Length: 264
Image (cartoon, rainbow, N blue to C red):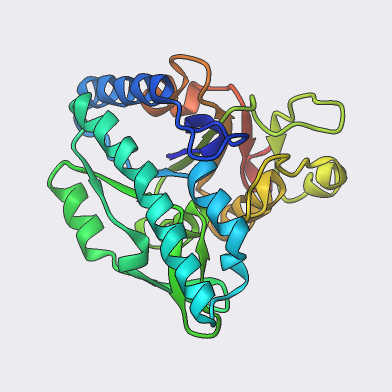
């Protein structure tokens, strides 16, 4: 489950978290875990007005080679960690045993593609009843020197290895919107051409592609894993996180992304 940067920060203002939203979401996950002690969740969060602002200033996602760019690389990492600390504190306060796993210390990319992520700590965290937390971060890159990993990059890598049943992407919008700002309830590979021109990219500072990129990445994932389902929904509506986790098959808000065989 990803908590989008637009949900937990105000992306219009640099370094501006939404502590009340974090507190509510932490409470919802805490209640869901109490209601279902067998529930296993890998949590992720975006960088919002923290990492994205710094990354756009230094163009870190395009590569890192010069001393000035490496200085920017460090600043982006520091901004991502600043938000990560706020997320961890909020969930620990709600008695969610969150364990943050910093991607820049455990991942490697090649030409912008994640090729290695240390899985053993994550698997051990799940085995001991903890909630592993990953997040958008810088990473070293075999060809580019350094770059940015989005939470979706990490989720795609993890999904192929952990075999989850569901991926939930929570943001501010009610789901994927078409050109008339109407909710698109279902997206499958066959339906994508009908809505591709309507997919709206983020209007805020976002170096990782916005909504269009998220949809296409998740579609590629469900094509490879037809049993996997992805739901993009709003986390701004109280109760959505908790309900989605406890009864995902009957939760119908937002946009469902699934293989064509699953679609109506």
